[in-house]
Each structure stands twice: as structure tokens, then as C-alpha cells.
Length: 179
Image (cartoon, rainbow, N blue to C red):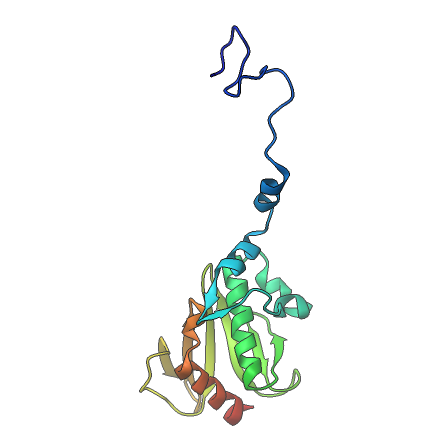
């Protein structure tokens, strides 16, 4: 039965002015879950389920301001990238004025990479190699820094699967040669 002004009934056949209809308790819990939980629960990166992945942003309060207002996708991509780098070796996150630097030790150690941009759905990383590696498919841009022997290789990560074997090879190379 549908609502009628004269009878005051709703489509459940109850008095419209009585107690409001509430959904069952179980379904209301599903509605209040955070978007990050839903994203992580339903998302896999390169075949690995990332629910329960370590939160490097919360662990490092010095870099937390870089993620203010950023999407949960960006945060998950950053955490995935750092987790993959930690499989190669221990890294340290150092905040600079506009970027997050990755080092092998402390704040004063040489940088092996920089997270230079955090977009709505991507993480942009720059690797500062001492020579150009033009024969690859993973870097979106490569170029020499004027007046130096440094060649910046730009990598943009849109999905966890973007950190493939080729990218891992360059991550290891940066860790061993620059660190």
C-alpha cells in the first residue's frame, strides 16, 4: 500500500506517523565502513591482496602532511610502493620542502629516489641515476639535470601492478648504486 494523505499509511501498511523505519543493524554496519577499507578489501595489486598492508604514512608523522586531502587510492599506492622497496632493503623516508626523499639510512644519506607528486590516483617517483637508461618501458620521462652527470628517470604509478619486474630492477639498481 502506498502513502495516502488521508489515511497516513506508508508502503508497508503501517501508520506513517508512528515509529520511523530503520534498516536492520547488520546492513547499517556495512554502510559506515571507510572507503579505504572497501578499496583495500576489494583491490589486489599484481596478484597480491593488500588488505592489512602496513601504513607507512601513519608510521612516519613527519610525512603525514603530504597526504592531507589525498585520496585513499593514492595512500594505498604509496604504501604499496614503500612496501615493495622495503623488500629490496631498508629505506628511510625523509621529508623535504616539496617532496618525500627515500634514503638507505638517515636524513643525511644520499637520496635513492624522490616521491615528487601525489595525485588523485597516482604516485610520481623520480630516480636520480648517474647514466641514462633509455631502453625501458617503465619510465615516462628521462632527462639530464643541466650542469651535472645526473639523469632523472620519472616513473608514474597508477596501479600496484605498475611495480613490475622491470621497475623492481631499477629500484634495486638505485638502492645499490646510489645508496
